[in-house]
Image: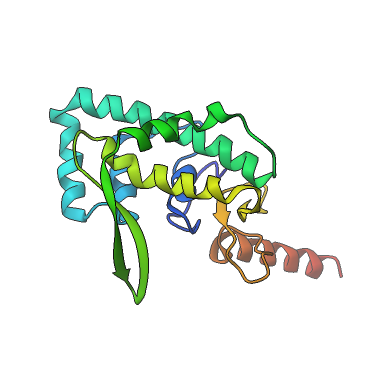
Length: 197
């Protein structure tokens, strides 16, 4: 993970992978950071995001309870996606936080058209705050169902190691983002070659 800068947002190709990349492991996720992620990933609108941010002052107990679930879910998806990326089996107990959210979340699937493409999205029924985790849990479950064939990878940059979904035609993508890690690697390789003459 990056030590100084926060990771780029929404580069992984799947909501659950972007969630796993959200904040470096040693950092606790704040309510404001989580709400910002939900807005950036279009799980909630900007207007809804502002209302959710205001809950931190008035609904402190509910927000703290959901933050604990968020942190538990984040650790769960990181462990599971590491195993998937390494093509290893993982214990059934590792998916318990995902199943807990899927079990208590009510809602429905809906076809949503964006930018000329159709997607099937889960629309959570808004009771309590757990519904905010429903889309993430569903995205994680869909990746887990893909099994060992899921093209989940980590960035080849040893200082980054963010997860991404390799949907390239050849399945040979190496970088979380060419604009970030890929170009840095190319520049470093060029300078090394140039300096070696």
